[in-house]
Length: 125
Image (cartoon, rainbow, N blue to C red; front, side, top):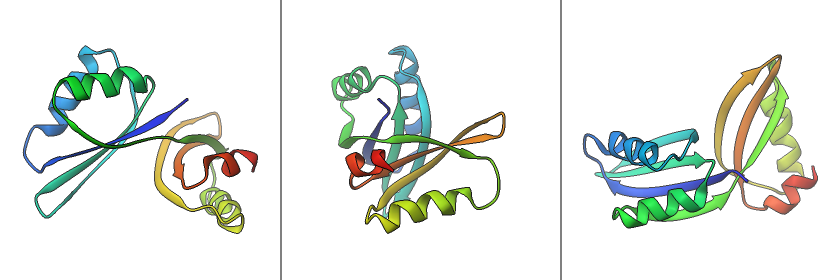
């Protein structure tokens, strides 16, 4: 199960390097990531392959985890409009996308990773 972990920290140089190194030492693979800053604070989103190990490592090293949740990895055709079609199916079912990542592309398919407000309902689509 892919899991998104959201960390809040101060906006300062080296934060992403420190977490990347920490995950490397703990043998946690990062599948997708995003980072944002706002008013001196940093918000780091990581989709990892071993959430239990990642969470334990972060907490043991004093990082502030503000959220951890399951995300969906979906394969769509790698062509224009596919993200819109998938997002429309979710929207028509009343499901909101709260975080979106693009993943890797392979043999005509594009991986997208989404955090949604109703994972159970989104899985049925």
